[in-house]
Image 1: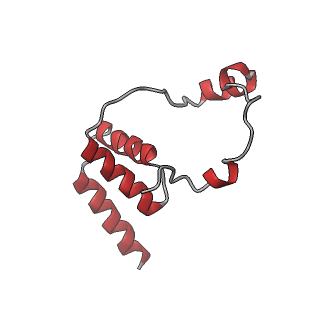
Image 2: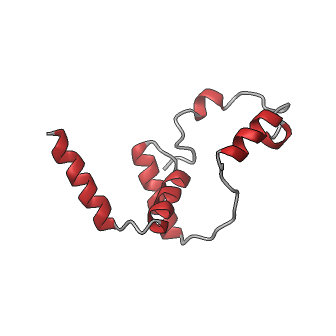
Image 3: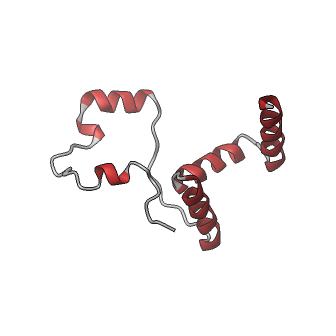
Length: 97
């Protein structure tokens, strides 16, 4: 499992961001961030086995494990169950055929 499953990582890995400014110090970016909600940096403790599952899924799909965790939390907050996800996936697949 790779530490960085972001496909854009290699493209920007060697760039020098020493002079980069945080979003909060660029008024236009700070306004856009505030208007669109953005994300909050938090610290959370997750079981090692659960984290390993999300990292493995991200590695298989070429995605980011943090995004997968965020999507799972959104679904849980909205009351979406695994049954709902499976049902919707089957419907989508049947419509494509």
